[in-house]
Length: 280
Image (tube, rainbow, N blue to C red):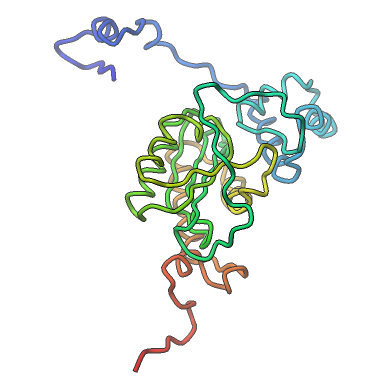
């Protein structure tokens, strides 16, 4: 909101009007060290294989790889990455009092058509000299990625933007399912769904299988794109992810979709390469 080149208002005056300290505008956050970035990359890869690893077990794994790190450091890095071990445990934590609690609505229902259920999740994206966060909105029935956004923070704004884009392009689903992450329980995110009269469903704690479709997407994206390229910048990452998602939607057949692509399944199109039967 601060414009350095404004001829009428100095940076000091703009900060005063916005009720910001001038020093906060000049402040540049100190990024993670090269070693921590390497550790985060290792944690990310291992977490895909062992999502039940907490900080203690992840620290043991890293030490066996030659990194002498303690559990406290690993816990901080996992929290920064938005990773939480997936296992059933006593419910000793309470949700934020301002966040409404929503039930899990998918138990026992058959998902038989596009736009019946959408889901969303956030994942950590390692780069050569930093990292970003990626959110995607997916149609559960067809596996089609409807929208996505990259961000350098875990604030809810980029998730809200992706949600609004999906609603604008594809209409409203019946149910929208997520985990209980702070981005998805935030007022700004849930209010968009309420305004669109979409039923909100949230997974039980420690049940990654409730959102398994998008977890499989992350695994494929990382092994087939992210880990292979080591993107230098956010711009490179955005182009690479966009190219991969386009191919995933339109060119990648799924056996669970009768060998059709997500794009073909969502729009109810015949499989490519198969003869099209025309009505008489």
